Length: 195
Image 1 (cartoon, rainbow, N blue to C red):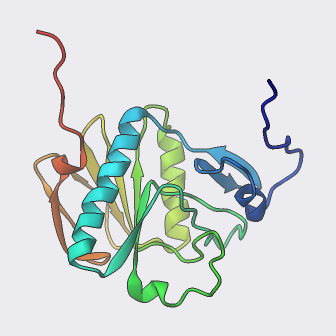
Image 2 (cartoon, rainbow, N blue to C red):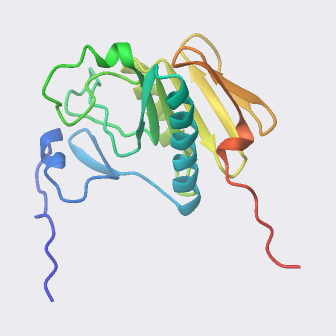
């Protein structure tokens, strides 16, 4: 049996090249090179919970759209071909109205809220670099969820990072006016195994 795959790449890529690849859901493009996002069973579940909770809120308060981790943001001034894929993101509807038609395939504006969910294979300095890239591109609010510690670290341009633990309530007024949720509600219930 022969498996069909994308041809090997021997040159720097452009964003449109990755769009044409058959399986590009977990791929990002940095400095013309493909970067595969780290995932795990737990981080994937947490990503889905974030999307579901925010989507439920938006069904009652339609002020924004929430997007999954397959949407790439191509809005980095230092590298116009670069795109990154937060694990979940929120863009206010009023900003979406400014987008050009037709849909370019990647979001050309920064989200109002970007959410990154750590997986066991994530390296701290890579996450820190990604946060710096996000701020450089104009992302105003970033949440980094740690399923292992069951915390969310909030990064905003006008303050120091703040760590929220399971019993804390988290808000995102600039992106989701009126939204409130306990941090523990973004993580799966712990399951005990054995006697």
